[in-house]
Length: 254
Ligand code: ADP
Image 1 (cartoon, protein in one colour):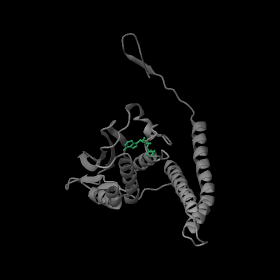
Image 2 (cartoon, rainbow, N blue to C red):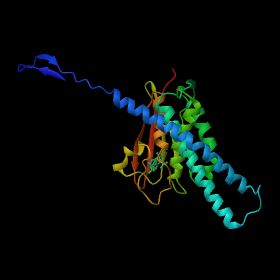
Image 3 (tube, protein in one colour):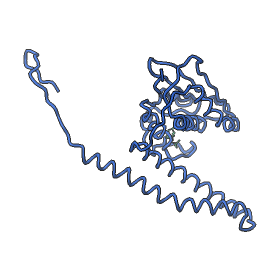
């Protein structure tokens, strides 16, 4: 902070230095603990999943309808837990910088086509239209294709999850100097303004008993991956009952 004399001439500067070693150490401990706990949970959960799958495949014997119903519920919950643990492990790796990005020059259409092809049938099943609008003269971007595919899957998965039949989801892109901006726009339920920043917090979900359930990790992961590429991810616009647009940037390769 500058110190100025009465006649406005600068006479000095105040510098405030804070020792953040302990905070940093605590953060590292928290990430380490998270990774250990997630690993410890993963092994027994894998056995539970295998057991339910074997039973459901009738390898052990025939099942009555009520047994099938209960086992299917157990399998679905085990799969949900597995996904949460995978996401937690991912966040831990990304935060600690252990997840190395394998950056190469790739075309945006190639990235978008890869992600949308995988999701096309799920969109069709839910009667939601998936559109892309990528200019053909867009420069390539520096990206780790598998990681950016994960970002698309997360954003498109959310766009679909929060849209009803007849909804439209559009992926578009444009250039802004050395950056490429990518947008994922939906015509879904939208997000109340008071939650616009919180949705990126881990485990945060907008309280809405009618909305589909999730663990609140999807956006946190997408943001971590984009930031590990040196980009930014944010909510560009969201209006309740109208829809939401998420945006992220990647560096142009040229
Ligand atoms: P979740 O696993 O619950 O989807 P996310 O991190 O993906 O967690 O999102 C956090 C919350 O943000 C969601 O619970 C939801 O309320 C809101 N949200 C995210 N994406 C959308 C979207 N496209 N439309 C409406 N709400 C969304």
